[in-house]
Length: 449
Image (cartoon, rainbow, N blue to C red; front, side, top):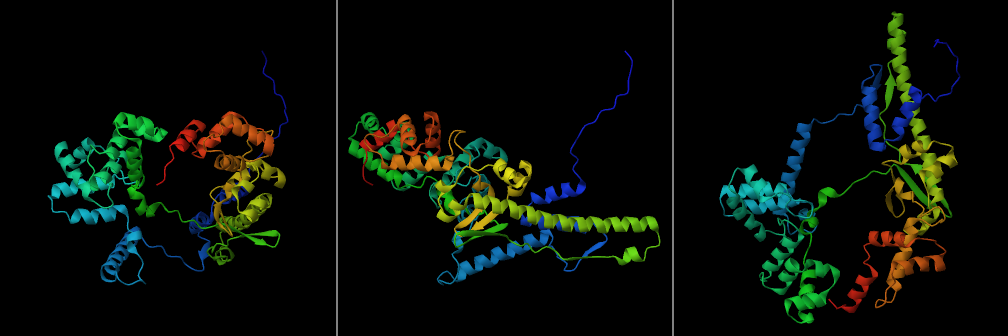
């Protein structure tokens, strides 16, 4: 077989460094954009910031944070009666609140250490995510000592914090009310949890050997308990976002604008180029200035692309922005926007990723405006169908509720939405709506709290 040279023509897409930079900036939100620009320009010796931004070292930040905490504690201890002072208990973390209670306990330092370590392993609901054995290993103490120390969690506020799960937490709360392990509420939680979830109060009554009215009274007590006692301190899970865009309703029109970010002002050190006699060095200097100028152009291109994409999305979901109802969201995909603007789908994805838009009724993630169709045959969105399912269930005969097939038939006949029974079941479960059988059982055993 002889080797031959063959000429062949082919086409390929080449992404230039400038385009790569634009795509990189496009996927950043406003806060990340500022950090990226400062990082890029700080490495360029031919650029200087007109207004120097100084950042405190981590040690200084930690020191300032400690000072703020001490000041907050001082105000809390000395100005509790003044209405003008903030309610600091709302900003106190669960750990801080429990540590204060641990320090006031009249027990050995060993016990306090066990409780402190266990507190670090509480989840946001206030439940312990570490076993007695693991805790004993960390504290280098016998398991029995650890178990004895953990008993003090039962005396803490809020009651139920430190338990291993929701059932144990509820039992601790019942115990604090003077109800022991033989009481009906405790037995229902520990022995008949599955029947309770299914609403089979008649079987619970039969197995306990008591009247069904007694079961209803016990469940009324259980429902007044707190299944997640730690959530009231869940301040650290609050997400603070800075919107990248803003939309306003002006008459029948929408006005979309960028939320301007205060970018650092820069100036170029062109004198280095003008006074440089070395041709090679002058070339390097000019290249550095060109890179900085390209970064500035890329930022402007990012703004233009982001605004175009956001304006198109808002126009497509105009009904949602005006009516403020999720059911008004129409099916919309990344591909739809990309086709309208003659862009690649990945470009739209980058532009909408981790971006937030401020509307007259709240801040939304931009990707919230994308909604899938339930199938190719229907123009209705999944959000619209879920809203309709909820309305159908809320208005049904409670003693003769619709099953999934009947709901699918109503959607088809009344709203012209062709949907499969299994899709209705999936959406119903997403909405946390029980099945028709369970809804009927709950209706039959309905009682007033």
